Length: 341
Length: 294
Image 1: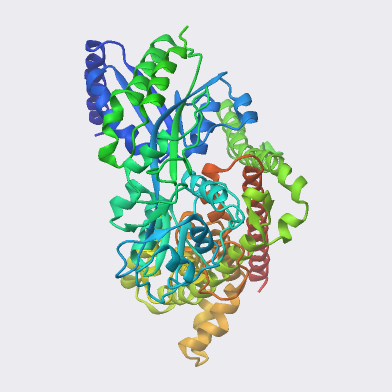
Image 2: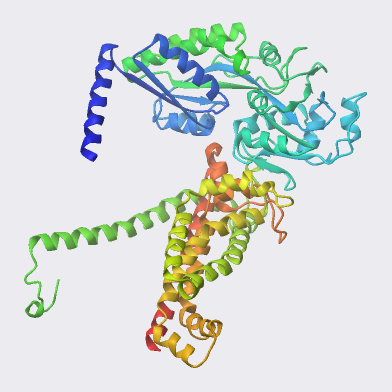
């Protein structure tokens, strides 16, 4: 039995090898990190391999922190990350200087479960107070002030947040830290000190599940997860004082108002602009500027170009926003900075 | 190896024998070496947080990564509390099943039961965890809480405690049991008078091993315990957190001191489980000596 299995295995291996030779050298690129950008990586890889038959790309997810660590240890060819390396960690990266390629913008939706309220408007200080448990009832005056004419029920608010460390929590708390300055006390980070009478879910889907199954619940997830779970989400008051719905367009508008540094680092959170959705996260693909392997480096450059150029057209369908044109051009140009041996 | 080859029926040791002895000794030594290396490297990487927090790591109730404050007490409490609930639920059930298998049921009924228990032991913990989230925690009032985690952990340790108890109970000398029955005792009296006293030590050991397993269980606990911070309470329906659950949840995105704090949690858990296991082994061995004496 085992012998026969082995024989089949060898046969399969041989035929695979032959296919590889037929289409030129086999190249495998590995990436890991941000789960926010995983859906985009998946559709992009799918499209990319249609035109690049000899290249295999794997994207493992695992979280931004894991991606940065994997890249620093040179166990992957590229990392996906929602936030940049800290300076001291970047210095420790074993492969030298790093390049950041922004690939998409994503609205973080504030999702809720409230019968009879189909349109909810919230401002940053109110969100801060809700998530800090200073506002515990939906009928609270502060919420009513954001929602003139809406009849809010007198029910308890149930707060849901991430149990696991997450880039989404990082961006959401960074938004509150800036936009609700003075009110928000929990600072920002991948995990913060949530009040103990809140609920925690595993991953975005876990948070969405709590909100979906609990009357009066509120939480935060990436827009694509909110859409996938079919939950309602609030419109958020932006810097210009307008309440903006979480949409890819709102995130794109946020992208118009950002300041981008020369190394393509920026923050799309609480951006300027009338139509900007204020809780907009961004994510990068990070690579080493000096590629050690010529063939792999060439494939990586092709894939990077695809991500910031042709691939951008795939984003809207999976509820992400493409990069603003100017940023996109800069990213395309930066691919030239990746050097091969 | 033998000191007196004249009475060694195996004859002079051959080259293969010696190589085999060395090889097995090496394997045994390797286990100790790995255990030691784990302890050393983990402790070394946990040092930064011990340096920063000092003994407050074990006494502070605040866990705030953005503030670089790491107090493990609520998680130590959560680990102990959920494990205690699990043992409280699992021990009567396990003991009942073990006694049923050995003293009451006919062999034709006991054998499939043993298989079933082994099957339960083989179910991956994530399956229990998902069932806990999707079914158990949806039950009225249960939610995600210490109690929900305790129940899941109880289900997971029942097979271990049952199978160990069964083996311990089976060592009760048939003469003792039949003697008791011959004196006119009921089956219940026979069990309480001969079987339980004979196996007491071994049963305690079995329970302690179950306890160790419950304390270290990660995924199932992480899914149903509720991940609430700072909870030191006896209210079993409150959401809480345990050491392994925190490590599993926060490791992916942790940086610097936060990472070191999570490793320190692992070291603490490591130390506690080793302690529990040592105590369990001690109790079992003492009872075995006593068992030989009587």
